[in-house]
Image (cartoon, rainbow, N blue to C red):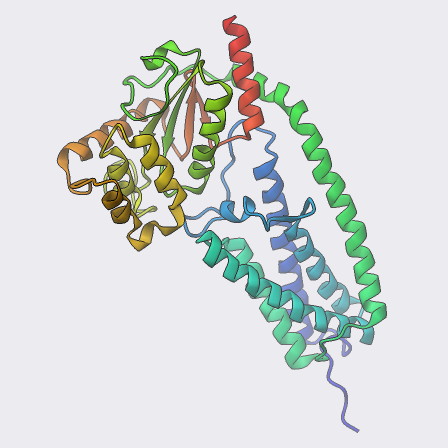
Length: 383
């Protein structure tokens, strides 16, 4: 009688050991992505922290973290990846026919879900999350091991599915409560954020006022009680987040706030402070935005709105749409962009976005409600 094939029921074989290691990596990657979700959306420090997952405009975690599929009913989707890895690990270390059948079936649905998320990332987000992609590969390998060497099933056992499902529901409930707690703490964090802002050294506003304005409440930049200088890169995902925050800030503090923009492309084509071309379209995007000072706010919004498509020649399309000629090979415009870049020298810029609020440097971005707290405190002090 032919022995029924199994990946986990024959002890710690070489293949089962690979399955265990693969499962552990799935858990580790999922834990990192869960932490990144909370660190990004619920920061506890002033300014965004750097991330191992943000490699470039295309390979970054931020686009996925800010997307509508980042969580399900307040539970980070990475949590479900962690639970899948735990299922595989549990199946290897405490094997049973029911659990292997369940793991085999769920590995298929999990991998199908990974393929769908991969397509969504490429098609809708125009980027790939490196750690997510690692998880997709690990999921594919788990599926392959169970399909090739384990019990090949599309239907989980009722017992195995019940045990795993109960654990997922319990875990999801605690994750939901954790997220809810994070939301509740947002307002409490504001007091701490204001204190952090107050302790930042005052470096002063940029030495030269930028001709590129997002919002002006007064004729000159220095006259407003709230003054924001944004050093930004059109291919930086976090910069897009900041760009989308600016209209909200302008609406809320309309007659009390001035917002000016400084180009800081992470591209050595025009930025001598950068060693490589991390964002190969950033200088061209800056040249286009600098092409017409009067149209800058509109160009700024349109370029960021098309951030994922910049490689497809969309910059030329935007230039033609606005009847702008000679933007990309213009010595005068190049000098304007370089002048803006040089304004960042006194602030020792290390990353984008960098936001100067009344002379104090904030690296990265923070949620709008924390900006509100800082601005309200500034206005209170001005009174």
